[in-house]
Amino acid sequence: DQQVKQNSPSLSVQEGRISILNCDYTNSMFDYFLWYKKYPAEGPTFLISISSIKDKNEDGRFTVFLNKSAKHLSLHIVPSQPGDSAVYFCAASGAPYNTDKLIFGTGTRLQVFP
Amino acid sequence: EPEVTQTPSHQVTQMGQEVILRCVPISNHLYFYWYRQILGQKVEFLVSFYNNEISEKSEIFDDQFSVERPDGSNFTLKIRSTKLEDSAMYFCASSGPDRDEQYFGPGTRLTVT
Image (cartoon, rainbow over all chains, first blue to last red):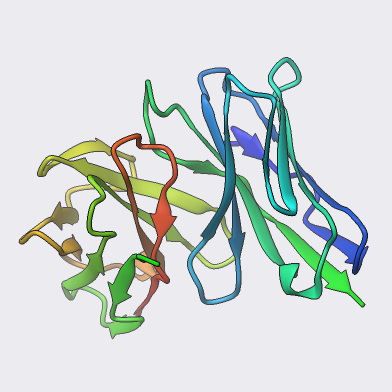
């Protein structure tokens, strides 16, 4: 079941620069997309989300872009900080009109170095 | 800031034993979920729960699993007869009336020996 894919297992970025994390999906029934950040031995922490009716959502240093025709979304973190170092998961659901179960990607480990 | 809490943080049990994992969702949330993550694998959906009944369950959620909201605050996952392959991190999550953003607890690490 590869409905949500994160093809880059890891990303290394210098502090202050932009981090771009990518995610692709295959199911056109997905209507809602989320990004979570996860530290070891902790639960996923919600970061930012976007509905399929939008193509961009911004919250502080975090911006999510959605390209429905390409079934692709990305998370931009600007400027990156060492505290951003974690595993980032993309997730998708059919909420609010269909199933709200989240389908997760495999994650991208981001390392921000000084 | 309200958060989802889970207990215990780590549970070790022998194969064949019953375990109950406990969660306290965010207080004004209406939708509740369990997910799990086997070491090195994706986070996987197990079950969703609303209005005191299961809304949806995955094929992982077989007859060995059950969920309950015994009172106004707790949400539990019971595994009747644990197997070695049930060893995983189990995450509880909850969401508000829009069913959009799901907020996760810190997880319970279940080790079946």
